[in-house]
Length: 354
Image (tube, rainbow, N blue to C red; front, top):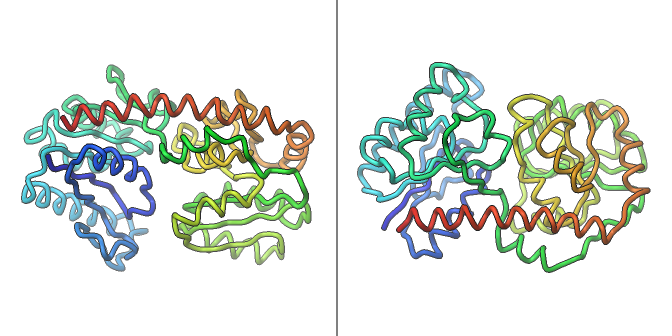
């Protein structure tokens, strides 16, 4: 048995690949990861398509490389004769629809993590046919079900390491103490300029808070320039970090910022930061009306805000009512639910390989 995991970008922005890696390795399955090296960070990857220094902000240039990458994938999978494929994202599912349905019917998994091109009227039908011919269809959030074609059993694959999650369930520890100043951490891929500006404007210059942006992304430089222009000494930026350093980075903070735009693209998602907050038992800041907000409200896991205008007061109110034991238990309750859903997903992938 030989499989391929096909992703749409660099490995560092697709941590869920490790979930599949773990299962495939546990089952003794030989596999490759096929990726698009957009920024040069995967120069050592054995099977990669490189767009070099192309300006991917230009829609025409980006579309050109999408087509080139799709062609690269088709040649690679046919040359290597994979038995099973895991295809990430609707772009690739649609671009590879022909080869998937003709040569891999029932032998591929579609993994879905972002609302995208499949919502287009002309592409939705193609995507439905790809879903119909797959072994199973995987989503990373229950919020996606309302936007995807009905009639399919969508399995949920959560964006966490199951081993780390299981260790977290054994522990009641959390170093959240409510002591001022509170560190508000934005970790991972730094994007969504407008929403993060609202967080900075709300807490910037307030000595009771320290805002840390750790990671890289298309909004990082602009946010740093904004904070500097405003003279906010309590807002700091650090670039790329190694995955093995993530636990220490998250453990040292007080709140995790997950304030995203209030739109169709962001409201249904479950972000990597949400799982980090659960695992390391950190309160979080999330956007009103989102799937994440519904869970934060139900389990009492942090602050829900619409526009950050009262964020300071909201955080103080949360801290005044905070009960360590109750909070840790609620984190574990939700994490246990996610682990159960992961087990169903894992068994399906095992069946897929057999």
